[in-house]
Image 1 (cartoon, rainbow, N blue to C red):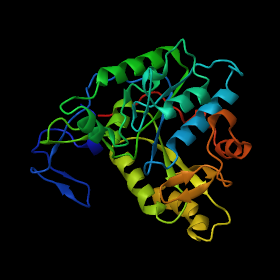
Image 2: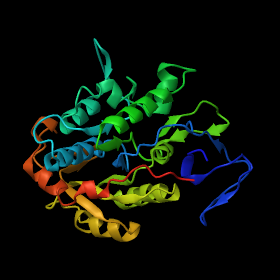
Image 3: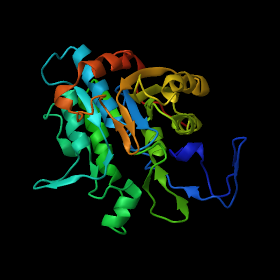
Length: 310
């Protein structure tokens, strides 16, 4: 069965009821990801977040750094695979569009250039800082997503790597493509279903995060995916906001899941700054406090091969 949004399958006549609301015959059908998209046998994790700018790339880099530090490759090039299939807001260099997130992931993993380059790590890139479905309509009206390029990246990493970290784009329901207005868009959760890795959710620490985190975790579970746990980013122990002291406990209780790590930082209106002292995040010089925080969990123990979902 094709990977589709929130486990909704079949024709437009399908009716689905989760106890809260019902999808009727008038509900838009979901456009499936190509069913032959490669499912890696190599163990891995899929990193998503409650929003954009919540720190998915920081967390993915910290996990990659942990795996590299604790692996057998030492300081040399690793066989750790990193993949961010979609990136928007890319800069334009002489070589074309470049994703800064892909550069950070490659550096954190000590990615072997014999395996591939930044095009392999992030095959789908857009200049506009929009969700991919909006970006492709804005930049190339009538074009479609190059799913074979994502498939080639997955196959190459699966063939050459010992572990793989996949980072999503935006939140779990961020739209990736909608070719037909009679079909609902493909979203990040559909991509996650197609790949089949356990999900790590990155959330903010402050006020408002409980609702966003619960909705994200619910979407993950409704899609039949395994929720590995939550990483809380931007924790401020001395914050005036009392929710910083209570949210960790409530996220775990409300979602019946583990808090895998709590990263220090500062939550802002536009996202999470990764350090208490507001220094820019620099993957080339990862602070010891962030390494200590991510090491609260052995993320290798959470990685699994692709799980085929019906």
